[in-house]
Image (tube, rainbow, N blue to C red; front, side, top):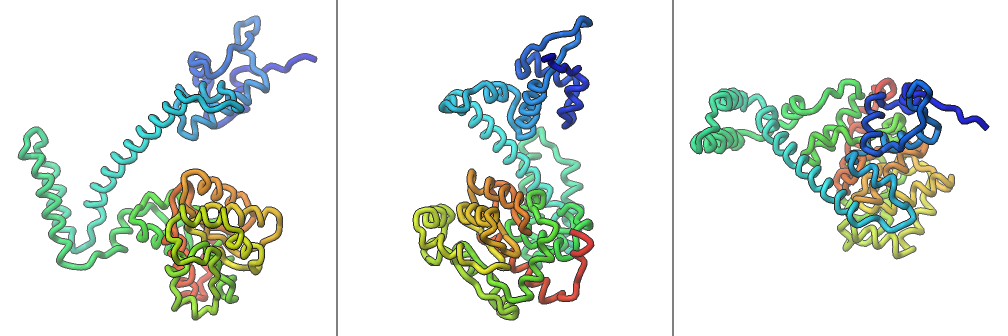
Amino acid sequence: MTTEFLTIKELTDAVGGGVTPRMVRHYHNLGLLPPVPRSESNYRLYTQRDIQRLQRVVALKQQGFQLSHIGQILESDSEATADASLMTQLQQQYQAVMQQIARLRHTASALEGLLGRDLDCQRTQAQALAQLRQLDVETQVGLSQIDQLWASLDAETTAHPEAFQESLQRLLPNLLHYSEITQHLIQQLVLACGDVSLVDLIRISAAAIAAARTALSSGCEIITDVSVVATAIDQTRLAALSCPVTTLIDDPHITAANEAEQAFWLHKRWQQPLHHCSPGSVLVIGYAPSVLLTVCQLIEQQRFQPALVIGMPIGFNHAPAAKRRLMATSIPYITIQGSLGGGLLAAVTLNALIETLLEKPDCHCYLTRP
């Protein structure tokens, strides 16, 4: 059977993702792509196997892996134990990335110190900018001026309470494409953790707000993974909706994510209630990744049909996987990508939904905007 060959242009078109012929040639030089036969005119000829190889390279690059490591990953035996040298290199890359993040957070903190000032602090804000323009960084005196600058700005904080909304208006990205209810939810999550970058990690499915309001209005069951999450829920507002609260791992002594994870994994008595949860309930998971994984499995098996899943467990392996699995289901969800999350953020999410439902019961902005 004759093999159908592709030109380098056809290869890049098939892979997409912004890959160019120049990038392909570079990958050949690095050894990420193997040598290929050439035409009589000396043009490289590719097959479907090369498409798959290039797709893997692109996917790993998009995940943040360095080109120097991608070749080792692709060539390693997936059945064998991970190469210790490669794992050490990846660990070093991780540490370098974390250092970059720390430096960027330091920069963000400095910008927040200026941009996050409310109206009462605008006078000192202008003075601070003027001093920054004249800063003499070549001398020790000039460097000490930075500390004096922040000291003068911080002195203003004792004159009045912080105006959070004014600060958020300057720091948050444009949220006008979201509904008023979703904007409020995002703002509450940012205020709960003090990190504006969280906005880029929040994921709210298209039907989540509508599903939440419908379920809460009908007095649905609220199911939390641990007692700590349940105690952070606004019980006064929740009482107005007559929504009962059930806790899966009903042990007040379990107050950490690792404890919740081990308890749920090892003791079936904490797993059994999930198999008897009423349909149309709202799940609020803020600690144990295994709880969310089990919920997803039950949903996939069509043995459980919650109205909404607020899935924000903490973890560096299972938690990101559980959130990705949640987003692949057909169930409305609100989650935070990656390892970030926690009981407080999960409870804040539910509290924000309850608050807007009670205070704006006739608002339907979420039907036309996410």
